[in-house]
Image (cartoon, rainbow over the protein chains, first blue to last red):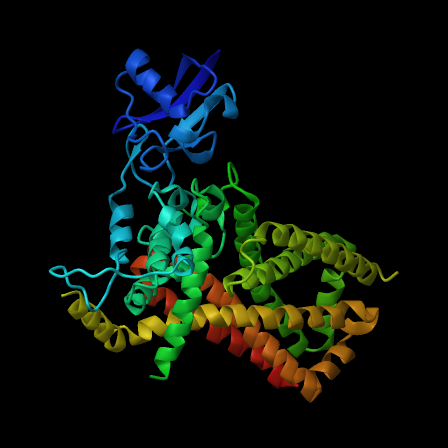
Length: 236
Length: 123
Length: 129
C-alpha cells in the first residue's frame, strides 16, 4: 500500500512542502518511512533519530498536527496521508532537525542531579530507599527529553527563556527524591519570573507526553511549594 | 508570537480551554474599563444616566450582553477549575472536571441569558 | 564542593533575590484568591442588577444603593478585587512574552499604575454619594 508523506522542509533559507509516496507494510513506523525516503528517494532529507525504541527521545516530530515520537508511531494507525513537520517552539536547523541547545541548557540549569551535603566520591556509600520513597518520583524519571511537552506549551511559544515543562518536571523529580537535599536550591531556581509562574495549566504537555509522565502535575506541585517557600521567606 | 496562544489544530480540549480563558480575560478587562467609564454617567446626574440606559438596555444591545455573559461565566467557571488544579488537587480526574465545568458554564449561561432577555424586554 | 555551592545559592537567595522571589508567588496566590472571591461578588452584583426586578437600574435605586454603607463596602471590595484580578492577569499575559522577559520592571510598573488609576477612578463613584 502506498502512503503519501508530505514533509515540511527547510534548507536554511526557505521552507517548503515536499511530497513522497512510499510503499508501506503493516507495522511500519513513521521513522522507518523517513529512513525509506532518505535511502531510496531523497538522501538530502534531514531528521534526528537514534534508538528506534522510544528511549532516546531524538525523533520527535509533528505528525498531522500532533507531536509524537516517529519511532513508536505506526504509519497505518495515522492513515494514508501524513503531514510531517518539525516541532513547534524550537528553531528549525534543517528539515525536521530542530535546535535543542536552549532546551538542554534549561534542563541543566535546574540542577537535575542529587545534591547532598555528604557527597564523598572517595568512599561512596549506598543510599537506602524504600519502594514507597521510590514511587514518589519514579514516574518522572521516565522522561526522555524529547521536547514534545515544550513544543506545545503556550508559554514557551512566546517566551524564549521560560524553563518549560520538562525542566521543571526534572526539578520536581529530584525534589521528590528522599536522597536529595537540594530542594530549596531548586525551588529558588524555578521561582524567577521565567519559572513556574509562566504556567497557566493549559495541561497540553500532559496530553502529548509519549511517556505519560504528566508534566503539568509536576509543575503545579512545584509552583505550590515555591509559593509556600516564598511566603515563609517573608517571615524569616 | 502571541497567535500561538490560540492554536487549535492538533491540540486537546485543555489547550482550547486555555485559549478561551485568555481571550475572555482580555475581553472582560476591556469591558471592565468600559463599565467604569460608563458608570461616570451616574455622577453626571439623572438625565445623562437615563439617556445612557435608554441606549444600552435595548434589544439591539442584547446580543452583546449575552456574549458578555458567556465570556464572564466561562472565565469564572473555568477559573474555578484552574484553581482546583493549581492548588494541587485532582489532576487525575482533570478530563471529567473539564467536561463538568463546560456543562456548568453552559447551563449558567443559558439561565443568565434568559434572565437578561426578560430584563431587557421587560416581559 | 557541592555543599559549598548549595550554601552559596541559599545565601544569595536570602539576600539579593528576596523581593524578586516574593512578588511572583504573592501575585499568583492573590490572583487565585481574588478569583474565588470574584465568582461570589460578580454573581451577586449581576443578580442584584438583573435578576431581582426590572426597576433595579432606575436612577433613584442606583443612587440609594450607592449611598448605603453596606453597598459601599461591597462595591469597594468588588472594585478592588476585579481591578487587581484584571491587571494582574494582563501582567501575567505580558510577562509570557519576550517583551516581558526583557522589561519585567516596565510591565510590573505599568500594570500597577493601571491598577491604581482604575481603582482610583472607580472609587470616585463610591465616594460621590
